[in-house]
Image 1 (cartoon, one colour):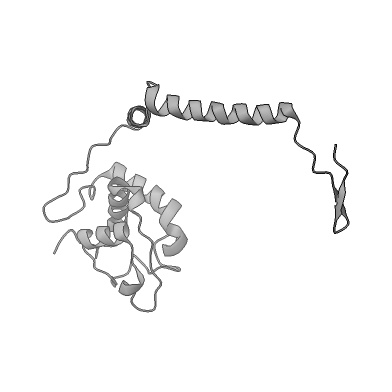
Image 2: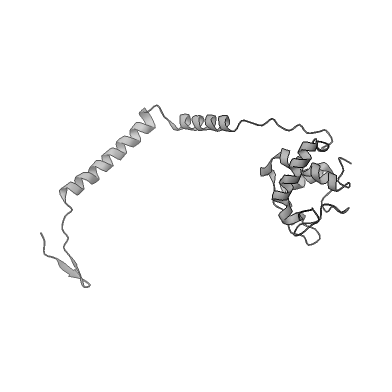
Length: 175
C-alpha cells in the first residue's frame, strides 16, 4: 500500500482497485458486447418482429371500428337516433359542460342553445369546429379558444351534436 498523501486537507491513498472488482467490471463489458452482438444480429427476435407482434396484439385488443359514413352534404347521420342522442347527452355532461355549462347555456365557452352561432351553425361547420378546435386566430367576441376534440372520435362528436340539435333548432343540417 502506498502512503496516503494530503490534498487540501483530504487524505488520498491512491490504492489500486481490488482484482476481483476489476474482473467483474471486465466481465460486464464483455457480456454487454456479446449481448448486443447476439440480439442485433443472431437472435430470432429483431426489432421489426417485436414491433409487428405488438401491433398485432393492439389490433386484437382494440379492433378497428367501422368508419362513420359521412353524408354528402355534411349533415349529422345521428341526428334522429334516440340512442345516439342519449349517449351524446351523457358525453356532453362529462366533457363539454365544464366550459359550455350543464345545459349548454354557456359558461367559459359560448352558449350553444341561443340563436347566435359564432363559428357557423351547420352540422358540417360545428363538426369541424369541435374536431379541429378554435385556435387564437379564429377567436371572436373576446371569447377564448377551444381545444380540438378529435380524440373523442367522430361517433361521440356526432352524438353530442345530435343531442345539441334537440336543444337548439338553429343548428341546421346543411345550408
